[in-house]
Image (cartoon, rainbow over all chains, first blue to last red; front, side, top):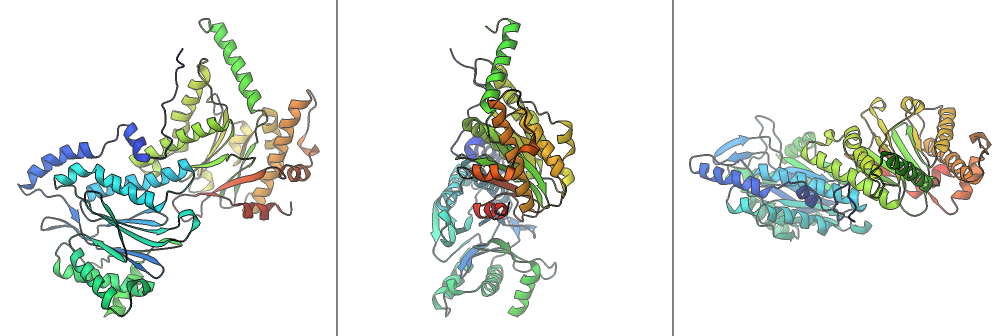
Length: 274
Length: 262
C-alpha cells in the first residue's frame, strides 16, 4: 500500500528559485499583466521609474563599482538618493541600470539564492554559477523586457575565490535578454554609459598606465570623474550634488570582501580633484 | 491494527521504544554561552552534525543522518522563504519550530504506517543581546520540552538518554562559574560536558542499575581516547561578526589549540 507522506518533497539541488516556484511564486507573469496596463498608460504620460549610470572597473586589488544616485521617469527626476549598488554576498555586488521595481526583486532573489545554495549544499556557489543565476533571472523577466517597461541591464562584479584559489576581480555585464559577457577590464551600463565607456577606453589605451595598474585611491578619483563626465551630457545621470551634499555610491571588492567607501573619503577624493 | 485505539497507543509506545533505542548511542551535543555569543559543540566521526540555518540560527542534531538532513532542509527552506517574502528580521526560531518543524515531526511520528524521524535537535537563535538569545530543544515526536534548569540557564544539551542529559546539565551547572568565558574556555567546558554525556549514555546500555555519577568520570582521559578516532566539531553564533550571517564553523586548528592543554 502507499505510505502517506507527511511532508512535501523538497528539492535538494539548492535552487532557491525552484523552491520559490514550488510555493507558488512567479515574478514575470504577474508583473507582465500589470505592465501591460502600465504600457498603455505610458502613452498618457505614466512612465516607469528608471535608474541610470553604473560602472565596474578592475584595478590592482580587485574591482571598483560605482553608481550615481539619480532615478528618473521620462524627463522627470524621481529621486536623487537612489542606491543602485546592491551587495549580494561577502564578495559580490550587483549594479543595476533600469527599472528598480524589477531590479530590486532580482537582487533579492539572487541574494537568497546564493545564501540558500551555500547553506543547503554546504559549499559556496562557483563564480560561473552565480553569473548564470543572474542570467536565468533576466530570462525570467523576458516578458517585461519585451514590453519595454521592466527592462534591467545589470553589471555583476565579484572577487573570484573558487576552491580557495585567488581568481582576482571579475566583471560581467548582461544584455536585457539575459546574455552574459565578461568584461576584460571594465563594464558600464545605463544611459550615461557611452560616455563612461569611451573615457575608460581612452584611459586604458592611451592614459599612460592601464586601469589594472591603478591603486584604490586613483581608481576612486577616476570613478567620481567618470560619473561627473557622464552627468555633463546625460540629464538622467547625477554626479556629485554639492547643494544637497549627495555623493555617488562607491564600493570596492578585494580579497577581504566588499567595502563601501565612506562619504568622508569620497569628499576627500573630490577635494584632491580640484 | 490501528483501527482499535488501544492498538494505536501500543504501536506508538513500541515506536517510541524503537526510536529511543536507535538514539541511545548518539553523540551528545552541547550548547554553551560565551563572551561573544553561543557555541555549539559535538564530536563526530564522518558526517557533519552542526549546521547554519539562517543568519542568526544554528542547528545541531543527533540521530540518523538522512533524518538530520531532512529536518535541516525543512528548516533552511522555510527560513529562506520567510526571509525572502518578508525580511531577514522576520525569520524567527520560535515560529520556525512551533509552526512547521514540530507539527511535521509529530505527524510523522504518529502515523504508524509512515517512517518517523529518528532525530533529536538543538536549535539556537542569537539575539541582539544575551537576554534575547533563544534555545529550542526539539524531539523526534515534535515535543519541545525544556526542564526547569534548562529554562533558567543560557546553555543546553541533548544526548541519547535522559540520564545522560541530566548528568550533563548537572555538570554544566556545577562548572558554570564564568559566564563571560572566552571561546577557548567554552570549548574546553563543552568538550568535558560532552564526555560526561557520552560515557553515561554508553554505560547505561551495558549494566542495568549500575548508576554512574559525573564526578566518577575522568573526562580528560576519556576525551583524549575518543579523539583518536573522532574529531571535535564546533560552530559559533558570534554577535561581533561583521557579516550579516553570525554563524561560523570553527576550523580544526582553532579547536586543537583550545583543547591542547586540557
